[in-house]
Amino acid sequence: MTIKIEHELLYDYTDAVHLEPHYLCLQPKQHASLTLKLHQIDIVPQPDFVAKNVDANDNNQQILFFTKFTTKLHIKAVSIIETTEFNPLSFVYHPFQNSQLPIQYSKQLQLTLMPYLVKTGITLLVEQKARQIAAGVNGDTTSFLTALNKFINKFAYEVRENGEPNSPEMTLLRQIGSCRDYSVLFMAMCRVMGIAARFVSGYLFGNPKQEQYLHAWVEVYLPGGGWRGFDPTQNCLVSGKHIPLGASTISEAVTPVYGTYRGSAKSNFVTSVHLVEV
Image (cartoon, rainbow, N blue to C red; front, side):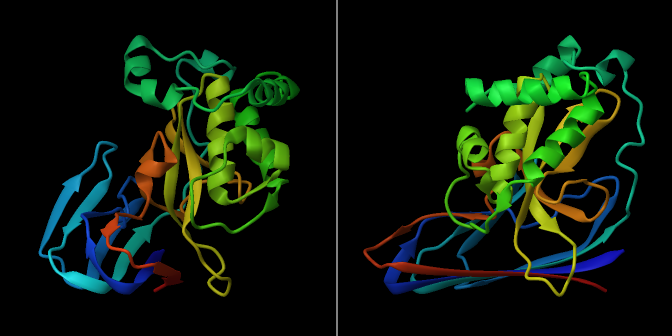
């Protein structure tokens, strides 16, 4: 399946401002089931310099440098990707005992995955609920992950594109949130059970007639299976229709555009995302 992605971001300022360096994470990440055919970005005003690199999380990154004052910043990213659907459960746990919780990573993997096991934002309530769900499936690893997907998916959904995700406990107590909130809670509850988890930002190719947004989900590291994606917002496993832009141990590190400006002007932000099969 070949998909064309258009992602536009427009910042309007009430007066001229000086743009500090802006960091972009808008290039889809290639992997075994996704090939990037084309990626181009148009920027107005044109930056004086663009640095292309790979960030600390191994995500493609561009840094924009500006010297002139401006009253707007318009960014349009166009990508064409080819993706293949696959069976996300087509693997064997190795060592096999990791099919039961808690996960026991090797010493080498523990060192590698340490940042994805940090129990940030995990309160007693979050831990108790995670253990309750695990007990309900007799500690089966795959069943825990799918049950956790189903549990969070029952929450009320809200679109909230700006601001940081809510804390895991707030989302659990309110039982309402955005895809980012769901993902942060999913990560926290996985880490309670010793499962390495990371936040993923990107796109979901679904019904092209529905309004489309940037999306978020979670990847967990399963011995024998590697990184596998779970999407509590959709109550599904990642199997070829999710298109990642970046992944990190924290959600703030994979913002599509991050930057500040100098000046007293107020800003207005508009964004749009369009995905279509070509």
